[in-house]
Length: 283
Image 1 (cartoon, rainbow, N blue to C red):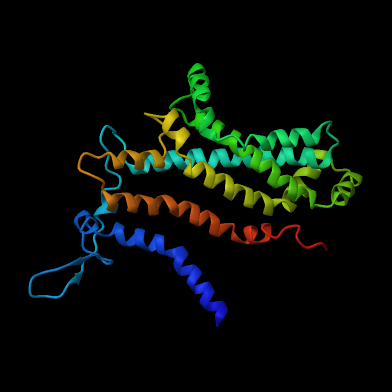
Image 2 (image 1 turned 90 degrees about the vertical axis):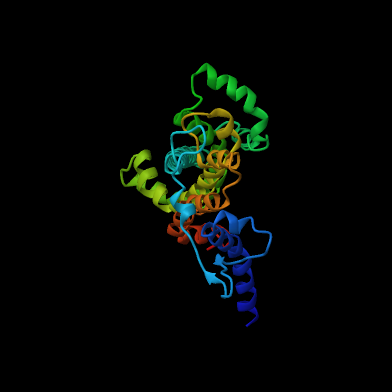
């Protein structure tokens, strides 16, 4: 009973922001900014009780171009999907390869290299935005998808290396040695033995890398003002609308924006549950 109470309380607290977003997205802007507290979208008529009156105007208007733009929400969502997925795939692929090298080979100065890799996470990202902007202008990378993909891959690579090294260290070397004795090459042993065993760690790493790239705002705002604009920057443009802040439209966009992350996390939930306890119990 106590367990259910605490789990129910936690679920209520965790789900409350999403429920509030959902309720706000089906209200009119007048209901949202009404000084009187109103949880549900209702319509009051004189001499009659309030009636439940939701609207989908926030979702219908979601893809309308904002001021100064010719594109709607779906265009920016597609930019976020392309940039987020490609940078996540690149981070996990490179991180897994680097982690395998650090885990299985005797690399001179490996501890120093690993610390240097981790130290890139110590620096606040926006502290290097000016030199990055100068460098990107030199190589004509602003307002391009590849520019943000390379940037997010670089910043997530250190996290991917450290996470994947921990997972690969837990995979017994005897598996590879047996494969090499059977005539497998090092590459075949890596792709057929290590990668299937490390898929749990890859799923966990992919979730963290995707969330980081999906929600990033500072670089996306600084390095893009025309093409390759992501959804967080789109929301910033909505807040500057001449008609005021369109809260139903923003909350509808937030729910649509959150949906891919929720779906992806649910699909790999079994790997995540295994990943958070990986290596804690010795067999």
